[in-house]
Image 1: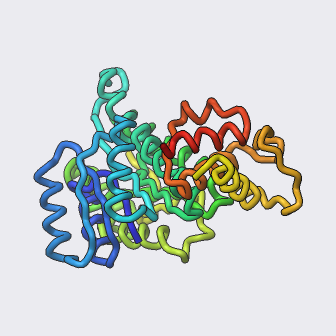
Image 2 (image 1 turned 45 degrees about the horizontal axis):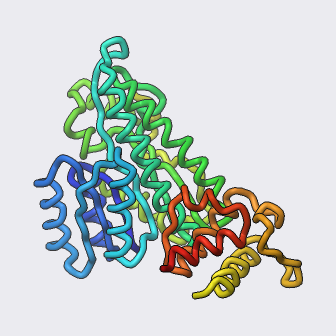
Length: 246
Length: 80
């Protein structure tokens, strides 16, 4: 399959890009601010999966024209796209009364509006080829999380976006699903989580541990596969059974 | 492709996507909704036509099409 993945320069996105390529798929991944991270992802793919095509593309998902240009570049290079994974995300931590206008906009524009630009761009190609998979990476924060109103709202918005795509495109062989993540040992979970949060998670989650990046890969591979052709409009929750963030 | 050939592609895609009987009367001055198409059907028809004809037309340009025949004219112009 041919994947288009946003946010592939670090964290879970980088792990996904490498794992998808290692599984024999072609991957176009985007990056924004972390050129070194993108190069590292590209190098890891080259080492682990030399037979797979991998393309790292700089992209500000907040810019719809750039999304269209980069989307076209990826499609041309890989010979079409079968699955789009909207993973790029940022957060700005502040209590609601202290949240700056620009921070709110940056988070919503990147996490939610950027995902919309990407989905809209690939939607016509998916309709024309009568096949396609949209996969949005959300978070348990979608139900609310202290100090992360913008992040929570953006991740909740992905559910509405995905559900709408599922309804509009279902008759055309295109599915859209969300993967909701709990606390993981990669990306924001690894970088930003406090010791207190980790302790809370590992003691409260029924599975008593954080999620592993490879578990996201397996969920993505399933939702992208023909086996999931009847699965759309769903929220696959990789939370270890704890569907709540403090 | 000339106008007639492009129109034939548009008609073929419309009949396929809307599951219209082959003997359905067709008039290029009609709009898609007169054949029962809803918005997502129209997007699909247009997307499939652009893919087959290897043309790209902007959303603004597409909005100018008032009928199926006018859409075919826009696709013709986009080939050039």
